[in-house]
Image (tube, rainbow, N blue to C red; front, side):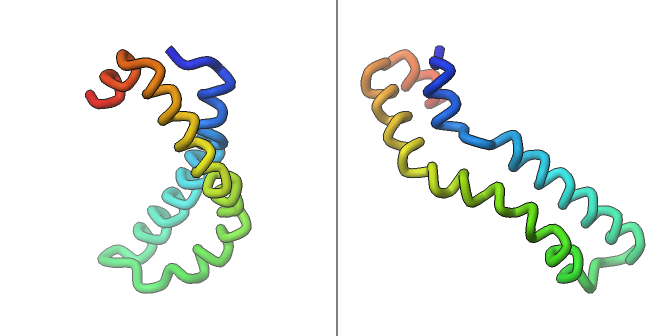
Length: 86
């Protein structure tokens, strides 16, 4: 339904973000197991993972352009717009 170029523009590096978030979640879950009841210290984990959060930079910088491309596609294709409403 979407051309590869449009998909790439809209979703940018979303797979990299998924991998980064999965790794962070894994780290937090490991800390949760260590702490048992609740995590009372997470700053060190965030500090360690912070360099990996740069993947958000590309995604956020691209956000305005992605929105314009998506809106243009929705305007040109009512069927796509209807599908996105579901």
